[in-house]
Image (cartoon, rainbow, N blue to C red; front, side, top):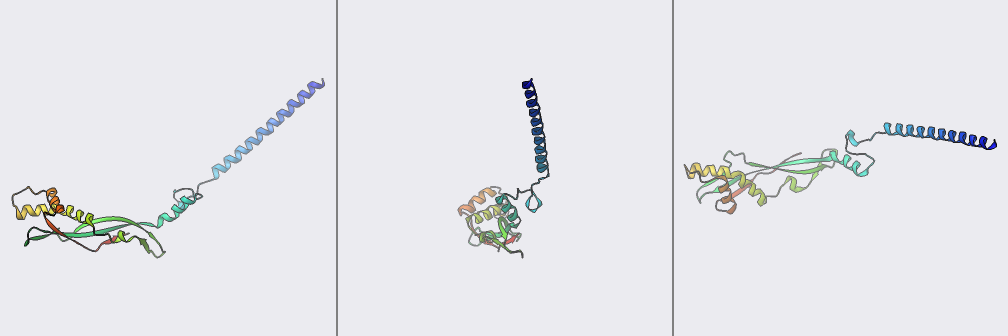
Length: 183
């Protein structure tokens, strides 16, 4: 009889321990659930960019509003020398062929001063810029050739004229206006 009483005591102790462990488990789960549901991710500037606890993401979120896009416009005319006595400047409307270039800069003061590379606001006048102007002028030059120099001819296409401008068969000079930039 002593042994059965001891077995019953062990079973009661085991059940009591099981109940306590189960209650502790539920308490821990409810605490974890409460912490998770009330924790929110904080974003810099109130917009999703990343968790501000990550120093790289935080640096990007803070610096991003300071970066600006700069659009620079370079305009120019192309003067074509059809002969030693005949030159025509294109476009004939007088407005020039605009080329839009894009770059970036960053605010460096609270007064709006911007730091950027020189080539963003003062693009170099290199062969690619000349090629752009020849390409833009080719249609106008072909039209001029057909109207003035070869009436009734449709052989001089813009592609043909552009090739002649690029290889020097049609001599030309480029004139560029000062560039203008917008932030």
